[in-house]
Amino acid sequence: MAADATTLLLAWRRGDRAALNELIPLVYQELRRLAHRRLAGQRAGHTLQTTALVHEAYLQLVDCGQVRWQDRTHFLAVSANLMRRILVDYARARNADKRGGAAPAVTLDENAGFTPPRGADLAALDDSLEALAAVDPRKSKVVELKFFGGLDTGEIAAVLGVSEQTVLRDWKLAKVWLLRDLTGRP
Image 1 (cartoon, rainbow, N blue to C red):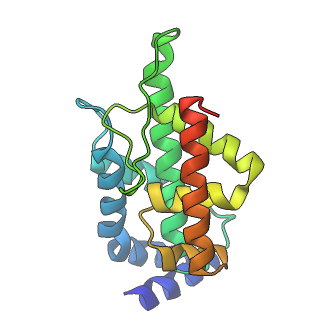
Image 2 (image 1 turned 90 degrees about the vertical axis):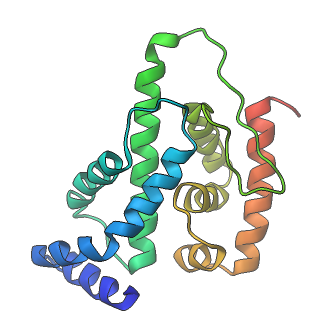
């Protein structure tokens, strides 16, 4: 499937709009998996559904004419980023009426795979990721690809053009940085 998806992505990049119609069925289940993982960590009663998130991301992907698609992994990374943006915008809109309230803390379990508890403030996490990106863009991208994209270490290394060891080191340091930023501890 990866080779077929890559071929279709390259055709789409060259302007073949029909390639997109062939590509979507190939990657739809992976997009649903990404969306489901993102929504599983949301607060109880979250009104955005997996299918709606996939379709919203799809609509934005169709308008991504300026992206120079490289392969399936790159496509999934861009999709994960779009889903992150959609969820953050959704969280910010939902919290717009709650100014002044205490935001729930996001915890980073050192032994687990960086999963905030249900109801964690996605907007606060996004702000922390943006702050990390200002200091170290690659570490921020590693978190985004792993946490929001569900990519494994090898896929992240391929997207970023670094070694798997570098990805693991960046992941570890980024988790510590985010924990300190989110909790306010020195």
